[in-house]
Image (cartoon, rainbow, N blue to C red; front, side, top):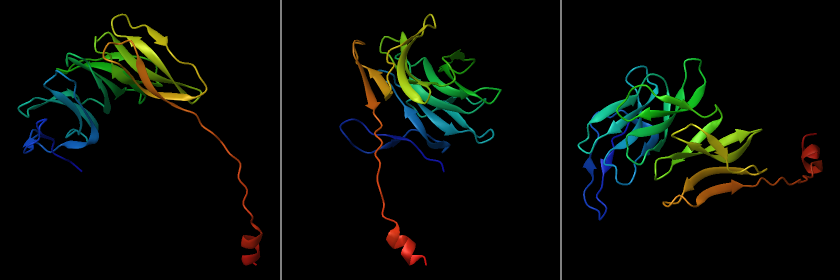
Length: 193
């Protein structure tokens, strides 16, 4: 299915159509405060894969990535780059930083790592890393490529973001609880005779 995106001004009013080709799928749509453009996952006319486009305020769409399947994760504060999960030639998926104008991207992080947020100063990406099926939070330095793990717990942490001043991280922590229950099967077994 395809859809059309519309813009509604903050105080309300009539929606204004901002996409014209009807190729948007049900994927992500991301914007960033102070950046006029926004980014969307689209259904590519080249093979039907998931691609990423930039949508300008006048509705013009330009392709950011359409070579392989790509899934939008975060937008840089200036809007000049995005972080996306991109299918590689060997069939695996990795996080990449892609220029918003299109072109060659930069491979980042390990295969099981997922970017969740781009810091307001543009210097860091917050990501979730999965070790033995458990999610922990890390920080990726955009400039030098170094990583630092921030959590290492037995609970799952995900969806991390930084406050605007970059001094506090917000995240979800999920603790799984298993309980044993019993069910009396005697009545069910009697009925099956």
